[in-house]
Amino acid sequence: MLSPKTKRNISRIIPYAVIWLILGWVNLFSQEAVLTAALEENSNQSVVIRMTPMVFLFASIAIIVVGLLVGTIEVVWLGNLFSKKSFSRKITYKLIFYTIFLLLVILISYPIAAALESQIFLFDGIILDKMLDFLTSIEFASTMVSILFSLFVSLFYSEISDNIGHGVLMNFFTGKYHKPIEEKRIFLFSDMKSSTTIAEQLGHIKYFELLREYYSDFSDAIIRHSGEVYQYIGDEIVVSWKYEEGIKNNNCINCFFAMKEALKKRSGWYLSTFDVGPTFKAGMHVGKVTTGEIGALKKEIIFTGDVLNTTARIQGLCNTYNVDILVSEDLIKSLELEPEFKINSMGVVELKGKKEHIALFTILE
Image (cartoon, rainbow, N blue to C red; front, side):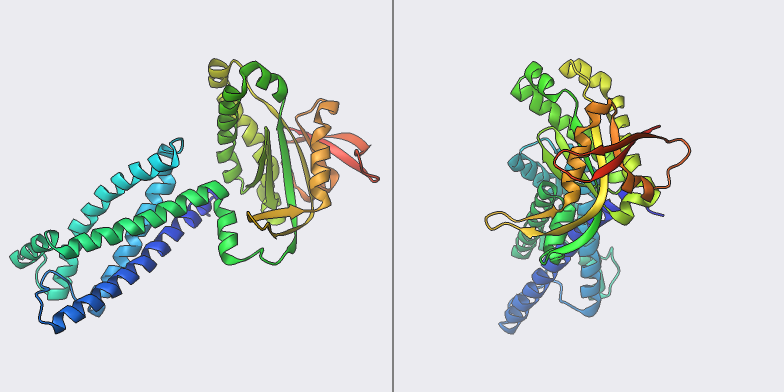
């Protein structure tokens, strides 16, 4: 069974293959049209490989493999390596790396395609001569331009996906929330403890750097437990789950404790770098929301519903009860918590601005 993190990575890698395949087909058919016209004029096109069914199949498979390779390298390694660089520097560094990488791919794939077209042995001298002619031809320059364009489009997709979120981008493409729909969701509102004091102590720039690291440390825990970041609001982060994903394996509760563990592991680094060890409190609740696209100048997918206000109010009571997490009775009833979790009742309270009362619980490992 694939883990949520593996599923997420696969869903992020597949679009690269789709982008490369579509642009690759456009380039293949464009080159074939140009070649056909040139042959009608009796021009010398010996370096160009004709589009036989076998060559087309091989080219399509090769393009998909290259797209998957670029996507895998980008998602698993290179994207993280340059994550803190500016947009222009990231694109420049990646273009250099991928250009060298794809040049090696051409040097490997061209002789194979030439051998398939000519139906002769791969290491025949004719194949080598044809490849040398190709590398010094206008067709090679045209191929490199096409590859660089495909590369730029896929890297641009990568940056857009990282900035607005892969899930949000896919929802925009599919039009899932073009018309508002009602769905049941779980929400976690987390808030850094003593954030005002920390901000005054560090100053604006240093505090912003702390926030960036603080949010980054939560990322793996959220991904591993199928969560989706809905919003960053100052020092507050809002995480959401579709109901089925949130209660599966108690993902929503386990996510909270994984987030705590992530900060605990880096507490020494925070103390040595910022002279503070950030901690947080969280409120959790479940309920129905209306989800849809909104905005004229800037599109967003938003949730509306009483559950968000209620979750925010629950989180605000953590200081009152001196606990790190408060969970509504509705959510507790939906979960089947393992024996290692201890559930303590905080009683029934009336939330600020709400007429109805709600039972709250805290959870300890």
